[in-house]
Length: 149
Length: 167
Image (cartoon, rainbow over all chains, first blue to last red; front, side, top):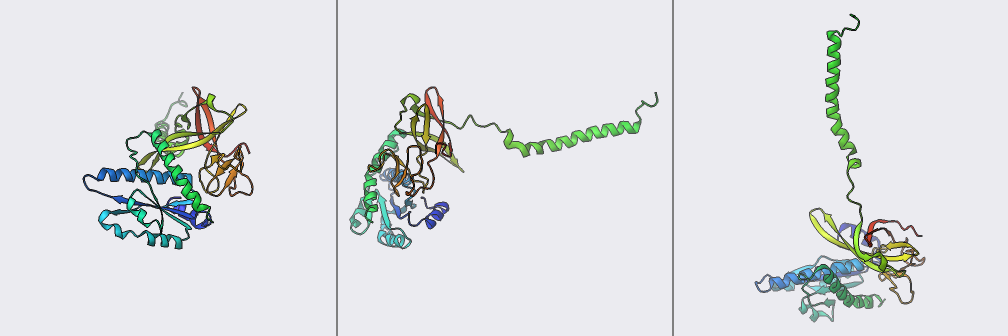
């Protein structure tokens, strides 16, 4: 499910089934030497989350990314976000990011950190294979969450 | 003789009716065309999408066939990749949509080791038989959709999504 009216309507009527939310945490860095890397990570994270959404559409809602710049990183508080989404009826709140610093919170929140892979230089089939491999890393995390209850 | 003569009045009547008729036709024809326009439009060369799978390579075991087509959403053009589960049933080629009829996840063939030879949806443990028939007692309420199938130069072509015809 995406965060759009059509899917949200379905979410409201199927809360029992759509119990997981994926929230991408996305760092935007405009410094001359970082901007390419930052955009590459963005592209990767967006492609991967869209792929996860396609595979698990009926159980996962994919949020638009929570985006921040390095200086104002504190404005993003994953703990509060988690609280908010739990109150809205999501049993599992998963953050996904290419920014390693969030792993320091992994005791308190569920965060999946993936090192970014430069997809821009790959052709369509290689890209697909890479994303499938990456998805295989995420599936066990999801199924262990889902088997908890 | 004088009976056959065309009077000035008749002549004017005829010409005015003729010219008026043409004018009315000139106005009405485009309107008529607009009204029936969708029926006149030429359909784009089939709606079939070529895949890279050879017909000869298809067996009784379902395989995943990816195919890509361009989708335009307002100004945003994108290549959409979709997949189908394709297998042979006797001589007939069956292509099933992998989209679960429950809430739209992607189903996998043999995805659950406890239930072999079935399509399995990992989200809510929905199951389907090989024909795409949903197994009662699992969340899906209908059978998997089917794709129209065609062949070109030995390669598989997939067409529109249609309701399952096997169940």
